[in-house]
Length: 150
Image (cartoon, rainbow, N blue to C red; front, side, top):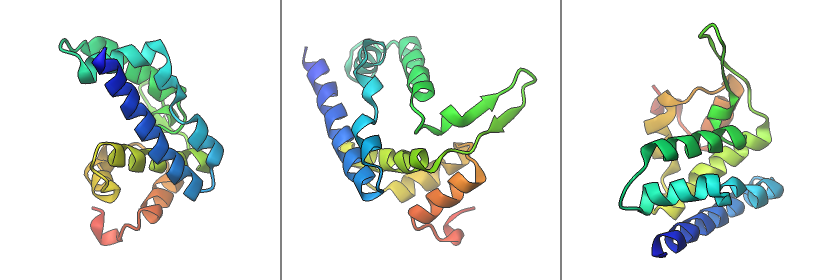
């Protein structure tokens, strides 16, 4: 039972930090509805077992994580279209979602005790398929010097 409360505590902490950041960015509603799908059994239980359980079910977690990305528009993966031909297209994110995405990164970092979002982004930016406008906004919001970026 402890693992369920531990994960619930993490979600609430994360949501609080994201809410605060969303308020700073003028998207209060996005902060309120952020990650509500994590409370659904289809996400909650696989996440609990993966992060806090003794027997990690990677397949169940992967399904839950994929569902979460496809259900929540603040994830950059939501905006990537893999066509039947194998071509990958990126669809530009509306600004409210890229703002929520950055708030999510900041909130996750704070909730996990690693609040250096700029460092995290620089380590992970090459793995992200982002639209040009989205990337420009993110890098400006994080106050990145172009010399910091390869």
